[in-house]
Image (tube, rainbow, N blue to C red; front, side, top):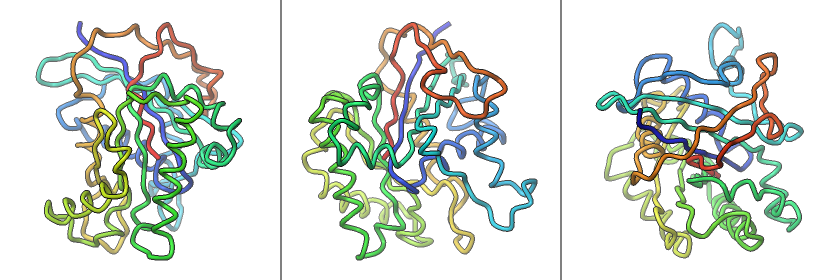
Length: 274
């Protein structure tokens, strides 16, 4: 049986980290994603909790997604999937940190040092809020905060220089409207790339765009770009598979904290999406 274990993490307040994680799970409820089929998860209750408010069964007047609690700090989401074409098994562990934690790390060196767990990730995913990028009043702060966070974490060695980085523009529908053509998205990538000239020197650097939960008045399809993004987390250069992460999950809990997880080997495809 072939397969790999991978880790991911996320950051920034209200940029869509939790919506993205929930969107991946909801897509699997409808079938395979980009050639991968769902096998199992040790954190089904946690996924369900995040998805509940976006469903009509919650009786909420407007679909929403609960934010990651600053008091909880860190939540893990585990997925085991099978690649349809060759039946290989792949394991993914997503780390969702509250935006408040990243805010602290951006300004306080001691807070940045506490995030040393990010050194163990296989991929850093930094989310940029497309809605805020669309406004001249907030655009510069989005860029400065994202670059400042990376700089702070790098200065205290909480992230490795060799860890691949994805910059993902979330809520892209609120940035470009209904025009999500290849040409329009390429234009978005060009503009964003110009602001990340230093960071683009990292190995595996790339820019992507998603709309995990588009605005109700748009024609952009639900979970736009999510399948391709998910596929990119799994399909990297083959390496010797690490030992499987052992998750000690209390089924009574909907939130899974750092203390609830132990690994025989830390090598997750870390998606640090900010």
